[in-house]
Image (cartoon, rainbow, N blue to C red; front, side, top):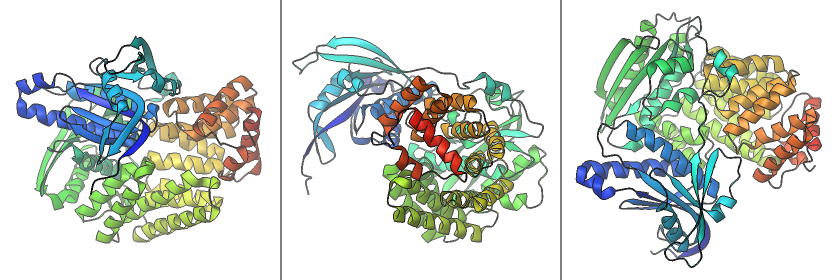
Length: 589
């Protein structure tokens, strides 16, 4: 049945392969494969930035977004990743793209987009440099200038098919150092105990969409190693910044502050899997150990187990009582169930709202296949936490309470199945904090750290909980520990540190750290709110008002009273302090 055409105003992205004919002449088969691979990778990035890929036709791609900032962010993210990807190719069949972004009216029917907006985006794309992005002036005007982009005004251009000239801007990603502060650089010292960074295993399968499989193996290894108290393992958030890039092992060792680096690859085909891994001394670049495993797909968990034993032996790490068992607890013997959890994880942990129901279906399928899969219950708990994060105190309290009840039930089920599952205790701790049951929240958070002393994400979550539970000094200790485990830290880690600074009596450091957090994640409402509040508390009113303007840009209906309803603080004076800082900045009650 033909879909009824829909006419609407949208932000359109048009991307085109440069010199596709020349690439085909070099090697027709390879060129077609790599062009399609480039479009698949671009489509994934488009989806993660809230866009929809409507069609891929020959050597061009068309996508739709609600906001110009999302379209440009996705385009630049792809161009950076594609440049790195092409640098790793050994021949000249290297697809490069130009991208145009425009606002205009379009007609959508049968997953096909037509209309003036698409034509304009295509004309703009033709003005872009190889690997570049061009944006219509009207779209440029809607974009917040706080984003880390550089703009070049190309002037008004006469475009074929358009009566009026169109102002055009070229957009580029601002370059910034990988480690942003001198303080952080000084903190990257080698620890006294063995330390390791696990790089993302390369997906050597023919299908780029199998990335989730190689990523999942990498994440399983990191999670298992984080449970070993006599070993320091760098967090996934830090090592995955190298994904898809050619890296210098010695540089990785310096940037992450580790003695050793593990790298590898995964090739999955039908019912077979090949995993290669090599352990390298980061200081010398010498290989300490390497192995290749060719197995049936159902043996993948045995491969992981063998690999872990080899690493522990090679690093001469002494396991404490119970650690060997805990390393591979919470798992499953069902490959399909494991794959379902791995497919859901980037959506749930990345809070990709529009795909959450899809992720929930994967988790329900995983639990149908293996009802005793503890980590599947943990992920389902985090699914319900996503609802609480979005709704908070600004939505129906009954619905929020139901989500929290479901979250607690999932965490409890995971703990019953595996009492050593650190992640389950982290979910339970967050649930108790949201319910303002602070003593229980602290108990579960500390237990999570005890079971996985190297899990940076859980430690950072625990810092949030301890800070809101009236234990800011312990929160500060944990926040700094999380940052050491995650040198290429995420904005959330900085937010934990900044909050701890504030409530241990160092609001100046809090302001600087909150500012760095929102620079790294410009759409983080809580970061802008806290920056506004602490600047208001410090009496830096002009800066506070500037920060408040960003709050209102992200949440135009923001009010102090509604926002405060979603906050959990044990000490009422802490909540009053946050609210008063917001009032000083002029935000509405």
